[in-house]
Length: 251
Image 1 (tube, one colour):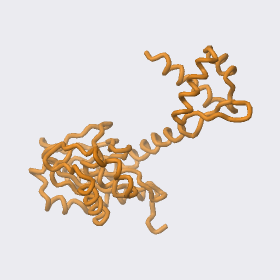
Image 2 (cartoon, one colour):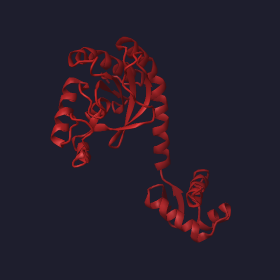
Image 3 (cartoon, one colour):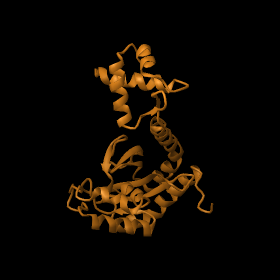
Image 4 (spheres, one colour):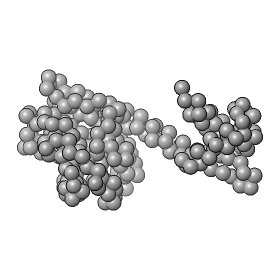
C-alpha cells in the first residue's frame, strides 16, 4: 500500500470537507502528520492543479479540479443510461455489436456495449481503450474537435493493421470526410484486423461533444456497401441520444 498516496487522499478529503481554507498546522493536527509532510503533500497537489494557496495567511483550498473530474464521471454515468434505449434499437436494426464511447485525450474509452447475436462478431470490452485515430467512434468524435486537436497524433501514429492511418495528413482527410458526411466509416479494421465500423458523435445540451455511438462487425459480413446503408441508422441513434441529452439544433 502506498502510504504517501493515502496521505494525499486524506488531505484532499480534509480540504473538501472544510468550509474555508486551511492552514498547514491545522491540517497537520487533524491528520496526525508532521507539518513538513503536509507541506510536501500540498506542494505536490499544487503542482498538479488540485490545490491553490489562498493569501494573505498562506492557507490552502481545493481548486475545481476535483469537481471537474467528478462531473466527467457523472456525465458518463448519465450518458450510459440515456443512450441505452437507442443502443438497443440500433442493435436490433443491424444485428451487429453496438458500443458507446467517449473521448479521453488521444484514446476512446468504451462505456457500454451490446453484443451481436452472431457467433462471429466484433470484440470490445467496456472500460477498454483504443487509439482514437484508429476506430470509427474515435474519428466521429475527433471530427467535432478543433483542427489543432489532431496535432497530438503527429509522429505518434502506430501501425496496428495494414490499413491503419499512420500520417497526420491521412487522418485529417478521414476527419474531413467524417465532418462532410456526418459520420465516420472504417471499412477495414485499423485497430483490429477484419473489423468494419460506422459511428456518429453524440452532442450534449450545449452542442458540445458528449461521446459517440458506433456499430461494428466483421468485414467478411459487412462490406462497404452495407456499411453505407447502415450509416443512416447509426446517425438516427446518435440524434436520438443527443435529443435525450437536451440538444436541439434549432436553438
